[in-house]
View (cartoon, rainbow, N blue to C red):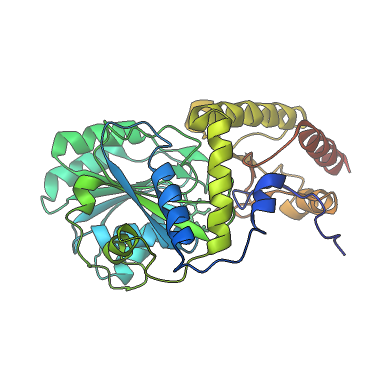
Length: 365
Ligand SMILES: Cc1ncc(COP(=O)(O)O)c(C=O)c1O
C-alpha cells in the first residue's frame, strides 16, 4: 500500500510531479465561484496565460474545466465553420482525435495523414490547399505526444501565410515548454492545459485566441458546455459560465508564479532539453534507442524509445513503479514497440539517478 504524500516521480506526459508549493496551494480556503475573490483570481490567471509568450498582438484566454481534450474540442468545434473548411495534418493519436471531434461536431475536415513516426506531409498539405478553396483553417498538433515529435509549425505557418489560411494549434503538450511564434504564425487559436509544461494539476484547460478573433466569436459549437464564445463572454463579464475547478485554478496560479520565477518558457525549455539529453545518453548506455533517430525531430518534453527486442513494457515499468517511478507505454499500434519518458515537473537529480539505476537493473535481469 502506498504511503500518503510519498514522493512519486512522474515521467509520463502529465500530470506531473508537483512542487510542494503548488501542492500546498490546493488547500487554500474554500471559495465560491460567484465571489469577487474568484473573479479576481480568474482574471489574474487568464491575463498571465496571455503573457507567457511575448506578442505584439492582444490575446485573450478562455478557461475550461476539463482536460486538454476539452480545450482542443472547444477550440475546433467552435472556430471551424463547417464541412471541409478545415484541414487536419495528422501524424499521431492526437491529430486523429481532432478528426473525430470535428466529425462529432458535423464539421468533417480534409485530412492529410502521415505514418505516426513520420513528419507532417507538407507537400500533401500544399496540394490540398491548392485544390480545396473552401479550407479556412489548418489544424495541427504542435508536439505529437504519441511519438515525441515536435511538428514543424514554422513551415506550416509559411504555407498558411502563402495561401491565406489560419492555424488552430493543439499545444496541449508543448505550451510553456516549446517555442510558439504568436506574432508571425497566422494563429486563430491555441489549446493547452494546466497539468503539463505549466506544472499545475489537471482540471483546468484553456484556449488562447487573438482579440481580433474573439471579437467576432458567436456561439457556434454543438456543445453548450464547450462553446468558446459562451465561455468567453461570461468570463469577460467577470464570472465563469459554469462551476469551475477552483482548486485547480489555485494550483495554476501558483504554477505560473513559479514559471515566471524560473525564467519563463525559454528557461523551462532549456531545462527540458538538458534533462532529455541526459536521459537519452543514459538509455543509450543500456542499448535503448530513441524512436526518432534525428534529435532535431524530437520535442524537449518527451522522448519515445524503442523497446529492446528482448524485453516488453511491463518488464521495464514494473520495477520502476515499485520504486515510485512512472514511465509511459506506447499507444495503439505503438503499444508493443515503444515506451515514453517525459521530463516535465519538479524532478530532481536524485530522481534521475534512481531512474537510471532501476531501469539499468531491469534491463540486466
Ligand atoms: C498533444 C495532446 N493533445 C491532447 C491531449 C489530450 O489531453 P487530455 O488527456 O488532458 O485530455 C494530449 C494528452 O496527452 C496530448 O498530448
